[in-house]
Structure formats: structure tokens, C-alpha cells
Figure 1 (cartoon, rainbow, N blue to C red):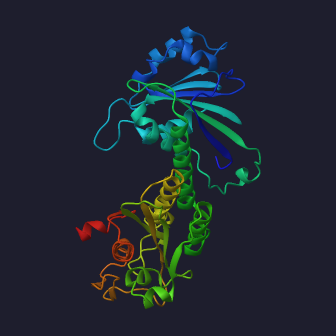
Figure 2: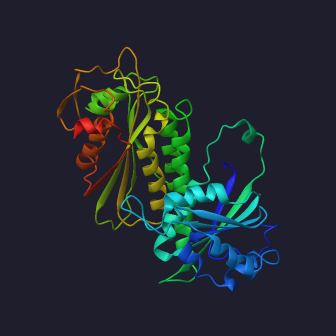
Figure 3: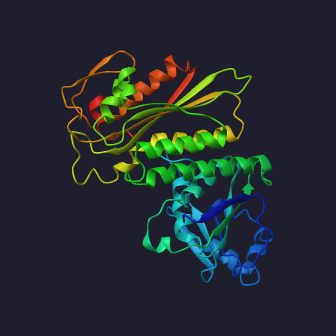
Length: 379
């Protein structure tokens, strides 16, 4: 998946399945609204109208279902039509799984996404998640050929019709941001420590023409960022507060996004067990998502001031690690007694949120974090 080029188009054009394998995907009710004339160019001559109709009739999504149309070159897959308070009408989480499992193999493939216009953005992001950029599999390192996946949207219901060029550009930017965030989260701490994360922030800044503000290591302590410093001071790579600021002329308000960037969470001295620690490379998901979203938003010409605040630290164990009973002074001036070093997320976010309010004068502050079981003790 790491060598996949993902492209969104209003129309992917016609091609036989043997030349360009194809997956049609959508809720069953939406798939049934397709006319044969809309799909035949990607299926003929090997798939007839009768086969297409029989395939649709055989689908019974519970919650999903799929049916091959021609060998391993063409397939149709149905998303759930029932939704709950835990998911969105787009069924985006199911869409990622269907694309991963049902998209035919090949170096040049096509996905035809059939949905309502209101679900286009969520669907594009879900499809992007199916093509992660990070891999260290031995077989993948030997593959050098580039693969191309074209995504065509067919909208049904209200506002049906081809997507505008501006919409397609927005989808491409969003997908790029999603894949960037996923790459950071997927990378192990040996390759994505705080120094590496700062390189990612600087790379986005260079692309957007923005120089980040970075406070790190002992400077955090000197400037009063006791939360971030206290969490990350025992790690080999020092903690940091980094900020990317988009300040266009004519802006009327300031918005700050604050992300928890714990590149690895051992739990500190309140150490996690052998079953709960694996996977804690993902504890930087909030900061990673904000970096991807910031990149996508600025590239789309956001009109107001937008600040991305990254609270980066590795919650490690060492001679200088924070102990339960220690007291830290946060950037707000408040003191906090530590009784669980595995509840570190709120400490780093506190410094970031106060910085956004006090130093960036943000009118709106949004924080994003992967907060785990310790929140139960906080509530």
C-alpha cells in the first residue's frame, strides 16, 4: 500500500476489467439507483447487464456484503444501510475494511464510490485510510513498482452530478492529510520519536511556507511548561511544544488546534503491563491528525488565523522520571499532584491549551487526543 498513488476524479473513464480491475461500492439502495449505462463502460464485455443485476440482487449486507462480477477483476460491495449513534450515515469505518478486502489486485485499479453528496468527504477519507504509507514488511521493500488507484464518485439523491474540480482538490488534500497522519501513527517510536515528529512538522511548514515555533527540552522547564516537561523529561529525546501558525490577511478570528503527541506511552513509573503497552506508539494520534488536518486546511486557502499546537513527549521510565506524589506547576500556574503517571495526556494538553489561549489569543480551541483508561479516574 505504501507505493500507491491515490487520485480522485469526477470520471475515471471506461476500461475493461482485465485492463483495469474495478470495485463498485456503496449502500445497496444507492447501488440499485445506478443505470446500466453508468457502469457498463467499466464492465463490458465480460460482465453483462444480467450479471450486474443478479449480483445486486444477491447482496445482503449484514452489516456488509460483496459479490465478484468477473473472476478477480471486478466486484461490487455493499455498505450497511442501518446506522447507530456510534457511526455516521456514510459508514466510513466499514468502507475502509471493504476497500482493503474487496478491491481487486493490480497496478492500475479503479474504485467507483456510489453515495449521496453529503457523504463524499467522509467516504474519500475512509478510502484513503485503506492505503497506508508506512510499511516495513520484508516483501514490500523489494517492490519498487508504483500502483495507481483512481476513485470515481457517482452521487445519487439530491445534488447528484459530477463533482466540481474544487471539490476534487479538497478531497485530494484531505486524503493526503489522512495518509500523513496514519504514517506517523503507524511508525514505531524507534522511527518516530519527538525529534522525528518535529521533522514532520518542519516538512509541512516548509511546504506551506510557515516556520514553526519550537520550545523544547530544558527551555520548557524554564518557561513554565511543567506538564509537557514533566511527562517527557526522562526520555532520550527531549519533549517539545511546537506551533504552526497560518495568519492570512483579513482574518477575523483565531482558531487553535491542540494535539496530544505522546510518541510512546510506557505509562511511566505507573507502568503498563505486557498486554496493554504494545500499540502505544499510537498515543501521538491526536497530534498526527492535527498535523494532517492543518496541512489540508491551509492548502485549501483557509481564511482565518489557524494555529496547530503539538504537545510532544515520550512517557518513559528513567532516573529522572516523574514519580507518583511529585508536584508539577503547569503553564497556567496551577499545581498538580501526580498520583498516576499513566494519566499524562491531560498534563501535556493543559500546557498546550493554555498556550493557545494566553499566547495565541485563540477565540476557539479544539484539542484532540487518544485518552485511555485513566480518564475513568479523572471523571
